Image (cartoon, rainbow, N blue to C red; front, side, top):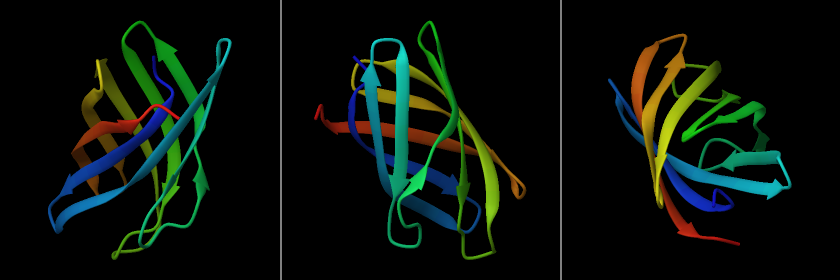
Amino acid sequence: MLKGTYTFSLETPIGAFSMDLHLQTEGTDITGYICGKINPRTELTNIKLVGDQITFQVALKTPLGPTNTTTTMTISGDVMQGTTITKFGTVPATAVRRDSV
């Protein structure tokens, strides 16, 4: 089950960044958004789930300026791990489910 609220963390060269990742499912449709300290609610786009892999895009604000990102993670229970591609490079990404709202 993918639906829920996750703590989404990116390990960047200038430090770790965490924000909330919210995912909803209805049938085969997946919607979601992120929000955090420097990112107001921002909708995910191009969400795809293939097997145990989820991919999505989101425009993030960072201390170095805005960047469009593509995240690909493998789902294992309540944890997702993978990478996020940004204009600054590729960084490790992790999401840990806090609840299954």
